[in-house]
Amino acid sequence: LKISEALDHQPTIEYYGTDGKPVGKSYPSPLSHKKIFEHCLEAMRSQNLPQNDRPLIVTVGTHRDDAGKCEESIDRKNEQLDALVDTKCFRVFYENNRHRPKRLIFSVNGQVPRDEDKKVAKRLRKKIVKMSPKPIKMPIAWFGLEVLLQTSSHDGILSLSECQMHAKKLFIEENAFSAALHHLVQHNIFLHYPEVLPQIVFCDPQVVLTKVSELVEYHHKLRGDGEEEADGYLDEEGEGEDYVTWFKDWGLLSKELLGKFKKFYKEGLFTADDLIKLLESRHAIAIIEYGKYFMPALLLHQSPDKIVEYFKQGTLLVVSFVSTCIPNGLFCCLVAHLTSLNKASCWKVCTKSKDEPLCLYRNCISFTRHGGLEIVTLIDMLSYIAIHIDKGKASKNVCSETRDCIHDGILSVCTVLGYSGVQFEDAFICPDTHCSPDPHVAVVERRVNYIWRCSIATVVCKQLNEDQAMWLPENTLTTRVPLSMEDEPSLPLLMDKVAAKILTKYEAVGIQLGLQKADLDVLRPRSQTLEDNRRAFSEIFDMWRRNVSCPYKWSTIIEVLNTEHVAEYRLSAELTSWITEAK
Image (cartoon, rainbow, N blue to C red; front, side, top):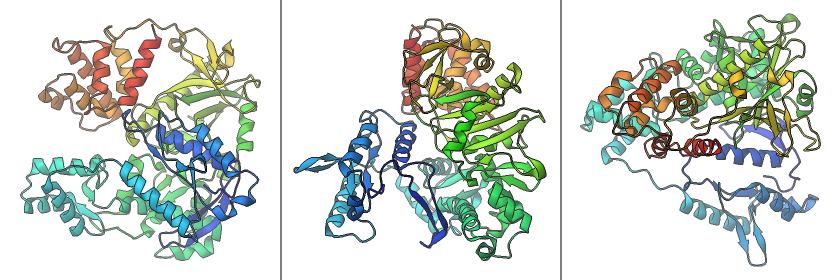
């Protein structure tokens, strides 16, 4: 962070191309230095890591020579940031100096470093290397395969058959090759997407990142330099005027535009069609009509003061993420998931006259559903998603159906992005301004009918009004039944509290529950859809219930989640807490 500016200052954002040169024009961040720092901590906390593998925090403050120009002292900055860091969740590297209190911020001059700055950088590098994770162990033949494939690849891409051919040179048979490829993909050394691009192996992950960076860079050039300056960025002449405007203002892509970026494309191996399949499967884009695609991450941010207006009117539900912020990328992927033509409950971006969007920003988007008159606005508030419907247009059916769509969408996106153990709950914006003048969450207290509780002043506890109650299905407003670790779990609870959070790990869970691999192979779904995975989990839990050698109780599933093969430590802790609180 820039220590020449106060923590509540909104820093300037600048883009740089892969050549190191500035791209487009700079603009102020919608978040302050302090809010960005806080969001980074929450994003790291949302990762599913073992208790003894806490993330390491190193905070570097730049522009040391200009620090005196800021009214907020470096000591005051340290106090504020240090108060945000929970040492139970993070390992923190402090600057220790016998002449002053320990500091969280390491102050340096980055652009024109002096000897003192170089010493600080050297110490940081040494400390980070020492505290980094241990090197990955693998069979020597797999390492040889990694090197051979990387040196043989065409710009970092190989076909699966080419990889298998090279593996045979190292006497690696088909089964061993599959294990080696899985290992390399698991550690992000290679990328392979068998569900959408089974015949393509990315031996250099930078290939995929670069294809997305090209879009971001071109988009930023259009916004900063204008269409005439940005036209020369493409390999051929630019798109038609309408397509360029749609891309710049509304994040709309065409197949033709994607085809203009020639880098890494290989006819018969990797094409623009393959890129579209990949981006759609990761919920990065949505197909909104034939040949036209929507990429929410390209949109600009709406300013916080405009967003607050939605909290003053209409009917609001909040989806609050338990003990964390919204996982990175989830909101944009959720928008893409909802707007895709491939979904039965397709949401359409709400438009004014001449197809101009009513509200289309990266953190605030208005939709219509099924041609209805109600306008649903989703708002990304970093730690929660607010769902707004205009008052008078809301009804029990509209609200509960909208809520269910959002819940299902979040689960689907978390599965695709690999966010396991993410928990969220229904909440509302607390109407009591005595707790805090800023919008904050009041969580629905599910153990007592029709009651919400403020997340800041937990003693503030009130009954839900009619507008709030219409969002929630009746079964969320009932008193919970007491549980213990030795109780037999019901299938609905297992599916809701366990399976729904880790849908892709049904096989690992089954093995840890003592099931035979042959039985699990029969259950393996061909299409890997969420519904197929749910069905597989349901069968596994049913077989576990009939397996007398493995006790059918909550404590068993807790042990399974904590095993190295399943490694759902965060979910285990949350499930344990949920069972304990139910007593």
